[in-house]
Length: 216
Ligand code: TYD
Image 1 (cartoon, rainbow, N blue to C red):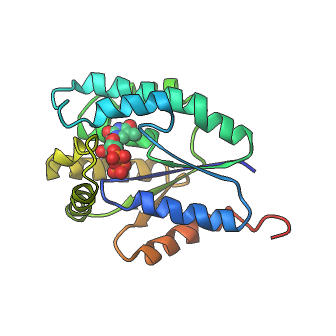
Image 2: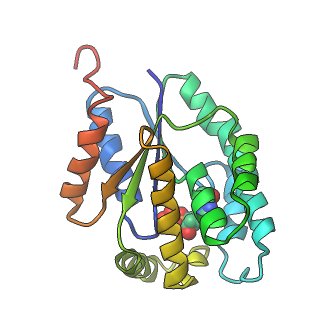
């Protein structure tokens, strides 16, 4: 079976770790899993990612930013996500269309309908069956993200971590609004707690979908 799950949440909400934990769990049940992320996920989109996350690009115009996210997504969907789903794989994607609505729409203040239209242009019918929204207070998330960046010293990360707390609060509220509008697809997961606790909360939701594969 093919199945598409996106993970969303503010910076430092632990998405990346939880994606890996869910992937191992699914693989141990016999599923063929692909982990990918946005912006990025393929060479062309990774080039766009570098522009988007470069802290030196602090004068990037919000409309240019929106179009770059859309461009990266169009390439990623065509080159990676759709082919994987056609091969009956489980796709776990670290951020997707809801991130554009939360960050560029709710937080930056661009027109939500315009953002939605660009999402449709870029992603077409390729929509997640399930979205796990890892929700936490921005204060906690930003702290975690700063520690992580200090440890990694990644040169291309960090433009969004320079944003104010007010911005991250808008992102969070935007995500919660989206979850309220689409409760069947978007499930809110409390992202405060130990890795194991959060993984358990996620599995409680995912186990409704995934059963052990034949012979395992
Ligand atoms: P990344 O370092 O991958 O952050 P995280 O690990 O928190 O996901 O950077 C991705 C950044 O891009 C993140 O700050 C959110 C932002 N973003 C948008 O603003 N719009 C989008 O559509 C997407 C996919 C990401």
